[in-house]
Image (cartoon, rainbow, N blue to C red; front, side, top):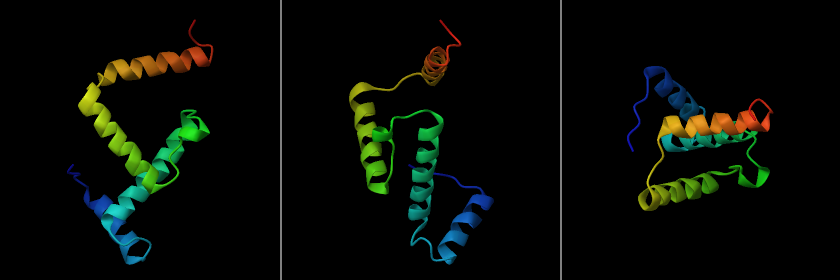
Length: 96
């Protein structure tokens, strides 16, 4: 996968590297993804046992997702989000 970063994003990664917090740009991005997954898990009500808590776990989940795509294909994004909104709405009592 190739990721294009803005100049602002590159500066942020460089600052983290210069501060000695991380050894490589990949480590900075992985830490950000782990942090984001924790935030999303809380926001979206992901059960505790399914939350990503380490970079090793994130790597395993990414590998599992790639395998799933190869074996089972993908979903239409608009459909998936519509279903998710409907499930959340039912859970909140907004939809019958």
